[in-house]
Image 1 (cartoon, rainbow, N blue to C red):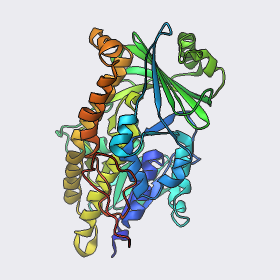
Image 2 (image 1 turned 180 degrees about the horizontal axis):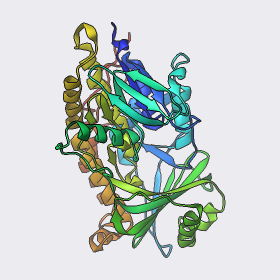
Image 3 (image 1 turned 90 degrees about the horizontal axis):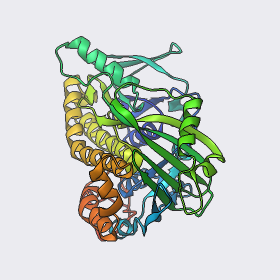
Image 4 (image 1 turned 45 degrees about the vertical axis):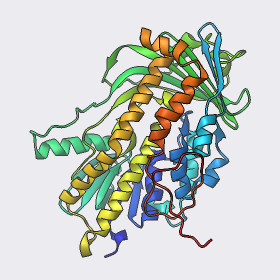
Length: 443
């Protein structure tokens, strides 16, 4: 039996699930992806940002060259108050480029997902199955079985839940764990807390690409970003009380929120109502925050938003999901290779590997969660201290210099890379990566 006889069932074919597909393929591990939607891409209108550590991973997987054409660098950033006063304008990521050789890139989410699918090898694309809504999972001693609402079932060695914040996989894993050992300590059924909601929309880019605008006010904030062809706006609003309940918003709710923000400025000349009048797609949801303590059980593991969720204000959520995949696949590949002739690790070996994976990611996730939470509350003036930070203490350019070089950079340089892939280093700057890429190709 070869390494490829170990088979992973990936639940969820979104941005993180498709990264897992590419990584498993490169690792020589067989897989199938079960995506609940009937199309590869559902355009919900949002964008995704990728920072230098995440862009390195796309390069390792051979995906970055194609994706570059879809992305725009974020160069300028402007910050306004509710009354239209611009109190900050700066080249936000110049220090980032000096340190790591690139600025962050912003993508239209639907285009990124489509490209991730399109770049799968022809023989691999049939492994991405659409219209497969998972209803149940059985984790047995030697196999895992995943059942779908169309009556189909899939058998493998392990299931990876990459199915988002409302993860069905997480829910099933919790149920199975507590049925097996009712006294076990486990995350609550709804493990995340919501303090803010968000409405977002995309539209034809109204100004130059590569610009980011922020509007700060009490309990409300706005982010407006421009890419190559589109612009995106995110309207953030604090809830009356934090909640763990799931809320579904209607078109009426969306329009009401748009009306509440209609006259807020987003540039010197544009207001929210100006871009929303031209919107092509839009959506609205609560913004959950939190990190689960239980990342795997039996032959089931979780990655991405299914186990940790942050507000999107700092733009680190997708990168965190990618780092989960890097850690999990690195550890899984080593475990499978060391499992003797069967190439099928035991449940106890898998559960030990989950703990290693979780420990490897924990500190980075704590940093991302803290950064995201503080950014959201600084922008929406969550209390008097956040108001002082947002309106005064973070305005001087030296504050950005300190944040970039003394806070973010020491953490970003430690981010993981695949330890089994050959690739040249795509980005070099004045800061060395802790995990340099390995290039064994002839020079």
